[in-house]
Length: 163
Image (cartoon, rainbow, N blue to C red):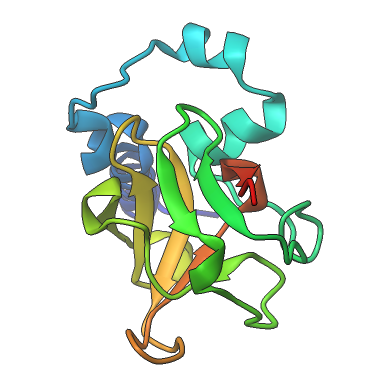
C-alpha cells in the first residue's frame, strides 16, 4: 500500500515534470519570428510529419529522410518558410542517418537553444525566420568548423543549382 506522503510527492513530481515539458516553457516558443503563424495555420500548410518535426520538435527516423543521400549541388531551405539554411558545399556523410552540414549559409539564418530532453543536454538548431525545429548541432564534425549540424530531412527542401 502506498503511503499518503509518498503519493503526495509523486503527484508533485508529476506536476513539475508536466510544467517543464509544456511548449510554453520552451524558450523558442517565447521568441517572436519574422514568419509567425498559429498552430492551425501551420497544420494547414505542413504535412503531418513536417508539423511534428518543425513545430513539435520531433525527429524523423534515421536513414529514412529523402535528403540524407542527396549529392546534388544546391541550397537547402527551411521547408516551412523557404529561408536558405545550408549549402550542398558544406554537406558531408556523417553516417548518422540524417543530412549533416558543417556550417549554415549564414550564422544568422540558424538559431540555437539548449535542449534538455531525453535525459541529456544538446544544442537544438531552429530556423531563425520561422522558429521551425531543424535538428541539433554537435562538436564532432569535420574541419574547418568541427561542427556537425544533424538536420531532419523533413525540415528541409532542396533547391538545385542552375548551371
